[in-house]
Length: 124
Image (cartoon, rainbow, N blue to C red; front, top):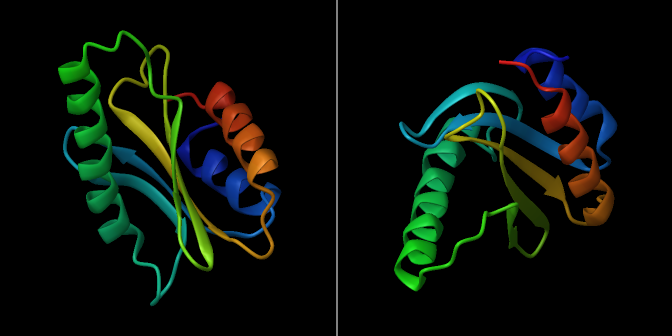
């Protein structure tokens, strides 16, 4: 089992093209931990903004009467992928992992696979 710091380090080191990662509480919009980012990628701002994305999608699913769960949300930019993985399981309710990737260096399928592994190992 990995704690938050270990999980974030694993994401940045094991996922090709990772620019930054955050563990976010989408009830408050607060980042519980961040790693990477920089002046062009403020992970605290991204955490708050992506909280709005998650909340909007959850509301939309409720309005549509969809009885399903969100696995992840992908936002594709010209040079980046932004991947939001909602965490499931005991102690993970209301949390998501946010991962920003360099589109030219990343393998999206492998990044999704790695985030699932990191989620499974994460102990809060």
